[in-house]
Image (cartoon, rainbow, N blue to C red; front, side, top):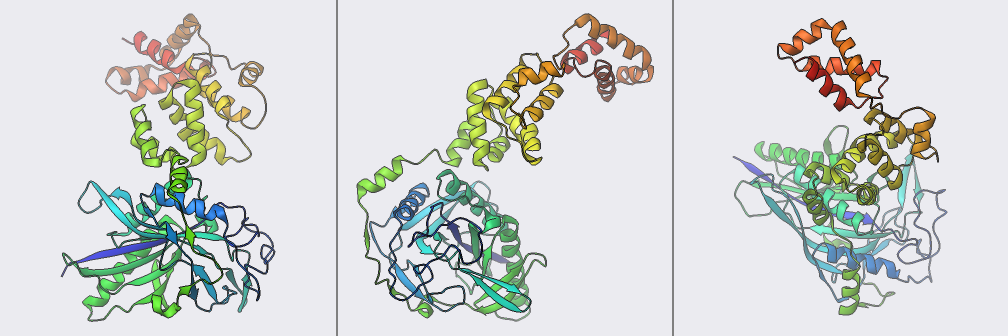
Length: 469
């Protein structure tokens, strides 16, 4: 019997607002425990929540970017349950009239090839809970995160495996970041996913019993959780067992899930309309204003990058980080060399920034690229200059002059040096003449060393090859 996986995701993203959803407490990550909270976000008696207008704007912005219908009349509901990190014993969320419905995200179809649309069932606004910290057999609670605004993006069960689930989450992350809605720092919990998985006989359209794994905070974990849980369910069914609807904990190290509790249904939360927040009525003009403020979306930007000479890989990597996008666009505008700019960003710039305490501005990068392309400095000298100037305010031209890095363009000197290297390396010369191209690289390297790296490598290669004809 063949089985297929059916998966849907509930992706939670914390919003880039300065204050919480219903009070004026800061949303800054970290801080001393229980210092970013007040009477409102800890649910003290007699307090009243007031909706942060920026949360509404970001929710509409997200919905428009994902092609959703915006619910013009929507409201909040109370989701009642007790948990130590939920001080009010209820969460303000949206069940009956969520703000966005019926969107989609396009990913690669891993089963049939081509593209595949993952439908978005709804997007709703809600508040985050606090955080429990377990130390030495005790559970401590930190309410700093309680009341931080969230959007929950709920997909339809259209995903077929872990790779698709991870790609879908990556695409969501790109869109959310490009819209300026969230920083999507998974390591800080500002983007996390609840994974719902079931399996069924291949070709069936029936949705079987599902399990849920909560708060997965990396693409690797999402992929492993989906595939691992599907495998567990298939083995269970083949051995005569029955899948139980439950919430499970996924252990990333063991790549296995373990039961936590039976899965609740909506009725278990005793939802009712939130009495302290009036319903929201959104005008068509408001939606159009938000729509007109949207930047170019990742897929459109990638297509444009490919048209101007980048590979699809280049475009994907650059668009995965907003700082890289900004650096690429501003630098290539100055240089008019988009492919060369992309190569530098993905290569030398990425290596330099990993070192820490260095900043590569578009002006600096453009200057170094143009100095190299004009033949004034070699590629190696350009790398050295970029790295040095990224940690100081020294202009590239001054660093090049101070360190005598100007390119050597004396063809006679290059030719004489090449002749010397050829005479000293008879074995490499014979290997090159017998068809071993790697021998030429060796000779070029020896010549460059003799010239202290100041000669253009292309010129050296051309002269050596010409002399050995």
